[in-house]
Length: 309
Image 1 (cartoon, rainbow, N blue to C red):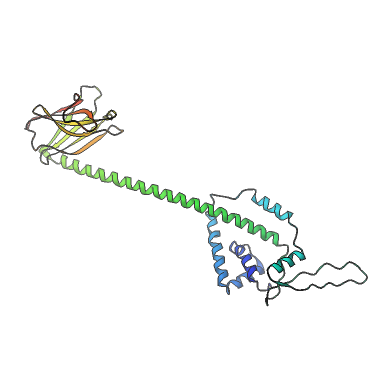
Image 2 (cartoon, helix red, strand yellow; image 1 turned 90 degrees about the vertical axis):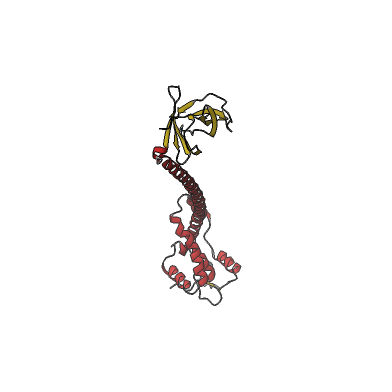
């Protein structure tokens, strides 16, 4: 039966226990110590918190040659001798028991030294580290490399998740803004199209063969208008389209606008007169970006307003 383990040994075995590398009596002795050492439970928990995350931390892996380098270093390390163990024991402020040698009758060469026993304070004697030390060092080295790789993977995943959350939030804000705009336009068009006999639809035409499709909706009851267009190219650089109300032959300036990349335009909430009396036509010209008080170019689209019934 393995005697109770000292504090230094318990600290050494803590990462191995967290990784499930202890077996047999050594594992039983360590688990018995867990029941009476709160600090040891905390240390094992800290190691286990990292090792539990290794199953998902597969994005980064240690160098493939790491194991070969560790094995080569272990092979080049001489096995621990009694003198080396004595040095370790003195550095740790421990005492060693004297080993006794017996001489065989009639022989000059003394026998090999007896196994060295390490004693810490009043703790029971414990057999020193033997041939399992290289395997333990290998396990510790591999565990350290795995923990480092896991830490890097966790940092990378957290950064990636943070970036994805920011992109998602921006997309949601854009989608909400588009939804609000479409809802407002739909309400405007519903109000216009629900005008019944008060709704006037004016089709704007062009002498060009491939003219864009442009309609002007005028609700005389609500005194509002809206323009919608498709197939309308974007205005030249530094220029905009301007809407004109032709009243008794005189152009009255209305808002400026431009088409989008798909050649579509929708202009709503245009203030209009309550009656079409004296309104001859609706026209569109190309003007400076800020608009003009009077047309500076010939109309490219014109729609005649029919007289009131």
